[in-house]
Length: 221
Image (cartoon, rainbow, N blue to C red; front, side, top):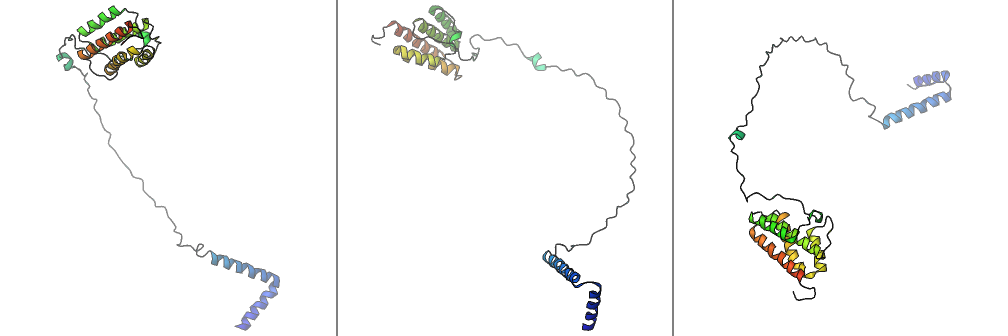
């Protein structure tokens, strides 16, 4: 064994120099070390499979044609039986729901006298339209306060703002005007049904406001 090895080494050195053999040994050592470090990542887990495409015969599909007959469509007659059977009802006087209107601003106030506005409010109350009667009474009160110089309303002013302004200038009208504004807001903004009691209360408050305007500011209340 030793003799064979010596002969192999002697033939190798006859072909290559000692420096070349040393470089080959270093390269082989580095390759073995790298393979040993990353083992077994470089080892294939399974042998590759050769996939052979299968030859598939084309499928022949034969479909019979469908014969469709034309549809006969007749015109539709739509008759509203409810409208034909519905009886026309006569409007009942005094039971019409009051329409909800936006908040009245000062610019919408018409220059109507107190007697005309009051008669209009009484006429609305007699017809059972208490919500509109309450609105007219408040409009008449605002006109009276404006003519008396208590308030100077501007377009877009709300009833609550008018109450604060009038109470600051004439404290005697603060309580009745606040009550009238509260009734108006409760009915028109709170969507509450107005009654004769609300209209009577509104008439009393507006009378108190007119009475307070006739008295001097420093006099007894």
